[in-house]
Amino acid sequence: MFSQSQHRRDCAAKQEERQKKLDGLPSSFFEICTETDNKVLDLSLSELVERHTAGSLSTASILNAYGKKVVSAQKATNCLAGVMIQEALVPKVTASPTGSDCTDILEQRLAKPLSGVPVSIKDCIDIEGYDTTIGYSTNVNHPASSSSAIVRLLHDAGAITHVKTTVPPGLFALETSSDLFGRTSNPYNEKHSSGASTGGGGALLAYRGSVIEIGTDLGGSTRLPAHFCGVYAMRSSIGRFPCQGTFPPIPGLESVATICAPMSRRLEDLEEFWKRVVQMRPWEYDHTCVPLPWRPINLQETKLKFGVIWEDGIISPSPACRRALEWTCEALEKQGHEVVDFLPPNMPEGLNVGLQLCFGDGGAGFFAPLRKDEKLDPVMVAVKSLLGMPLLLKKFLAMITRKLTGDEVWASMLETLHLKSPAEERALVVSRDEHRAKWHQAWEDEGFDFLLTVPHALPAIPTGTAEKVTLVSASYMMIFNILDYVAGVLPVSFVDRETDALPKDFMKSTDYKNMGLISKGAYSVYDADEMHGLPLGVQVVGRRFEEEKVLQGMKIVEAALEGCGRKFIPQEF
Image (cartoon, rainbow, N blue to C red; front, side, top):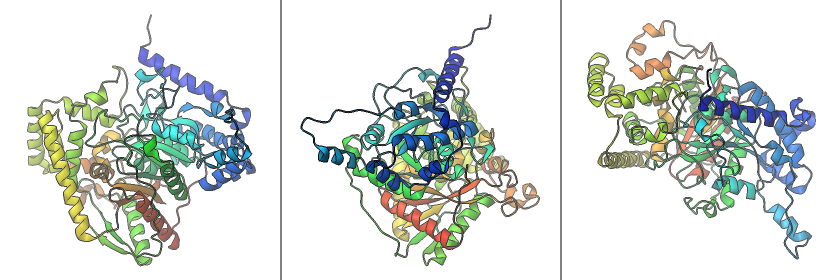
C-alpha cells in the first residue's frame, strides 16, 4: 500500500491546523463588514491607538473588523500561515503591582504606543509557542521557545499579533508558493503573483487584514510585494530595526544581510509605526540594534534634488513601470524640485558581487532544510542547477554566450556563481566595499537628496513565470541591500492595457533584438492586456541611516502625485 511521505503528512497537518483555527472563529467573522467595522478599518494607526487607549474601542471590536478582512483575504488569496486571533481575543489579566493606584495603571496604559494595532508577522519570525516554518515542511510542529525581538517589543507596546503570513520555501523567490501552504495569489488578479517572499503580507495588507506587516528583506522581499500589491514598504539600514529571532534565507550571511522591515497599507501609518518602534528603544530588545533615537525631519517646504535611474543595465523597465516613474518625475518637477538623470556605478557588477556572496557556500545553507520531494520556486531550481554545474562547463557556456549573443551580464553570472573558498569570499567583500565607495562618491558629487527607480522592471508577473523572469530581475531592489541604503516603495498607478502596451511587432524590433537573454526572458511574460489593473510602484532611495528622511521623501512624492490629480486609490476588497 502507498505510504505518504513525511513531507506530505506535515504539509497536510499544517493546512489542517490552519483551517481548524479559521473554523473556530466566531461566526461574525464570516459576515461582511458592517458600517461600524468599516469605521474601525478607516482609522489611522494613531487614531486606533488613541481610541483603544482611551477605552472607547475594544480589542474585540478591532479584531472583529480586521478578522473579517483576514477571513476574506485568506479565501481570496491564501495568504495565511497561522491564525492567532482566538488567543488575541482572550483578555490578558495581569496583577497590578502592590500599592498601585489608578494613576499608575493609567500611566501603564498610556505607555503602550501601539495599543490595539493589529500587526501580522511573516512566517520566518519567531513567536513563542508557534512554528516558524520559513516555508519548509521540516519545521512543522517545532514551536519557537521564545519570541523574536520585534515581537517582544510589539507586545510590550500593546500591539495585537493576530496572524502569521505565508512565505515560499527558504524565502528566495519571486512568487509566494509552497507545498506547505499552497500558492498566495495577487489580490488584484488571482492569475498573478503577490510577490515574494513577503507575498502573504502584501496580499493581506491589500485586503486591509492588518495595519502593519513585519516582513524581511534581503533582495527586495518586502518591496516587491509592495509594488505588486499596491501597498507601502521600507527597508532600513542594518541595525536600525530589531531583527534578532528572525530567520534569513541564508543563515550566517553577513556580507549581504537580511533585515526585518515593516509594510503598511497607508504611508502615514508606516511613518508613525517606525517612529513608535524607535521610541520603544529597540536596542534594549536586540543587541544588534544601533542606539539611534528617532530624528524628526520636515522637508515639506524644501526644494530637493532627485536623481533618476532609468536603467539597471540588465532589464529595461516595461512601459507600465516606466510610466509610473515618469509620472513621479513630472509631478516632482511641477512642485519645483530638481529631477535629473543619473547613470550610477555599474549595477550588474555590484549585483554579481552580491549574488556571489549570497551563494558563496554553494547554496548549502538554503537547500539543506529542503526535503527530497519538496517543491521549490522555479528561480531557485534554476539557481540550484547552475550551482551544481561543473565550473569548466559554465566557463565554456559563458564563452559561447559572449560569442553568440554578446550578453556580458549573463555570461558573467554563468562563470562566477559557484562555491567559494574563504579567500575568495573575503576578496568579494573587498569588491563589495569598493563598489559601495563608488556609489558614495557618485552621490557626493551629484549632491542628491534622493534617488528614484522602478522597484522592478515588470508589474506583478503571471503565476508560473518566475523561471523566465529570473532572480536577477530583482536588481533594482537588491542593489540597495548590497549598498545598505534605505529604500522605500509606494504605489503610484495601475497598468493600463492601451497606454502601457508594447509597440506592435515589438518582438521583431531592433530594441528587442539588442536585449540580453535575461531581459528577453522577462519581456516574454509582459502583457499589458493581461496585466491591466495591476498596481505599479516607485522606489525612493536614501543613504545609510536616513530612514526618517526617506519616509519624508515618500510623502513628498505622494503629495506631488496627488497635486497633479494622480492620487493612488487602492481597490476596495
